[in-house]
Image 1 (cartoon, rainbow, N blue to C red):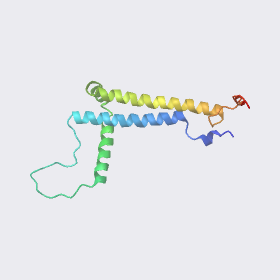
Image 2 (cartoon, helix red, strand yellow):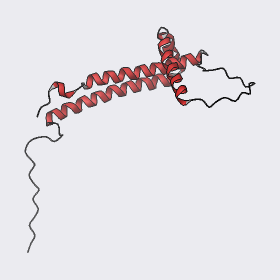
Image 3 (spheres, rainbow, N blue to C red):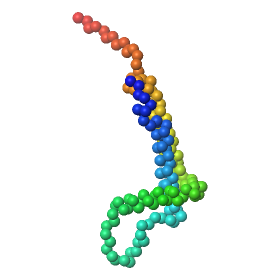
Image 4 (spheres, rainbow, N blue to C red):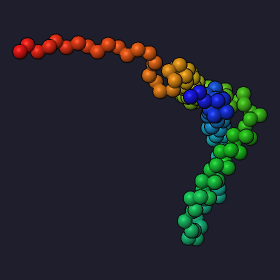
Length: 146
């Protein structure tokens, strides 16, 4: 039974493109954060003063997580106009990260191509991976001597 185009859902090409865009944004955010730290603009929630002996409450992990997300997203958006400087910093100072970013994006493209090839082969075989046609003849075994 053939599936209609509406039953198939999102195509593999669109899925690969969306995954590539999301990973590119995450990699950009990391690159922008590395550049921000190199300029000395580290995100600090509150100044640490060791001379104050007030006992503070234990920090809330949810507040720390939300603060980290806010710092990541705001840094990634704030450094979009500085894209040439961020990229030159990453290529010259953090070459390992540039190589990893390219490899990750190439991996996404390779996985998409592999899935596209798998989809085509499954369409040829009817969706179960076994080619239709004649079964090979059984191997004849010699009869036992009585």
